[in-house]
Image (tube, rainbow, N blue to C red; front, top):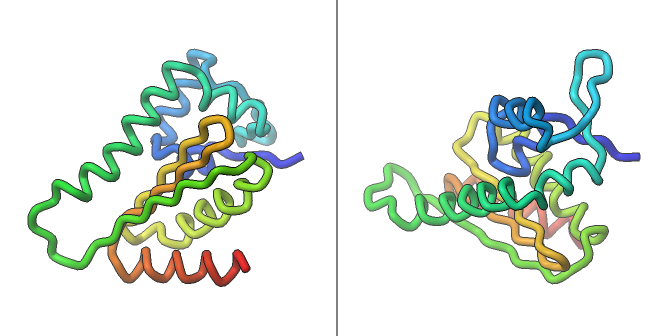
Length: 146
């Protein structure tokens, strides 16, 4: 069974770990603590993401990534925003989500944002940040995807 940590969920949703801990307290997010580390099954993760209250917040968070990109009038560096819409089962989309979550860990010191939304058989991935970082991330994605 694949387990997700609080940091994984933060990267996938754009929510802070503090916000996720608040959701744990209200039991909207359920998981188990093993050796002092929270871990979550896929079922727990998707039950959380599919909750109407959470879904609305995640949708707003992803829209904010794109809106912030579009509304930024003056930039000090080249920026890029990529939106990938896939029509596929979650089983097929897991690789792409895992790929971008792993790259987000690598790009921690860069201002790259990642958002993911799942609705039935549709997966939307949003990547935004400095153009060289987004370009390199997308290049690696397509190289490893093939």
